Image (cartoon, rainbow, N blue to C red; front, top):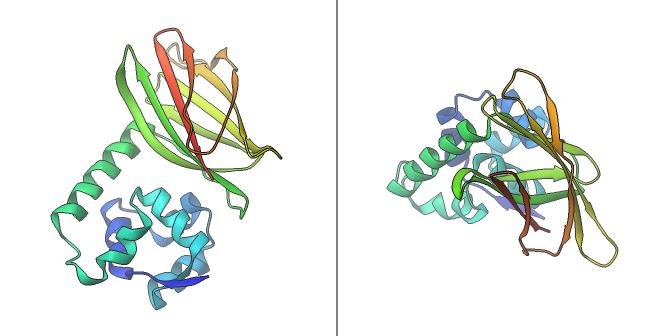
Length: 195
């Protein structure tokens, strides 16, 4: 399904992050030619729009609704600010390219204080990674089961001594939009799959 998107919103969001088209292609899992075509024509598939909205940390409707709004509205500026904060907190997010992806809302807290709150597009059966500064690394793999549930397998690493030390490797099984919690030490990791 092809849809019209506001290329100014996509370009503005990309420029605010100081990303080239190549960098946006890498983090979104789309090809460079797809990014170039979308920014030139303003036409994209639903899957491409979902990927772009995820990495730009905006709603799909914001890409579409902004057609009648100024590109630099207060909402746009706030989305950009929160997006930048999310990128700083999450550090490194690897997003593989695939049509079989599972969006995972991920929130990490330490002693009930939020350290990160991001959405990650995870390729099914492939490992994605998130780093919190030089303190913590989280890798996870999402697998959709035949009964509609999602199995999320995680590995949590302590990086504080300059070495990668595996703390824990728990797995949780949950349903679409149902949050599962993993606790380790003072940390809590909340995972919510969005199919």
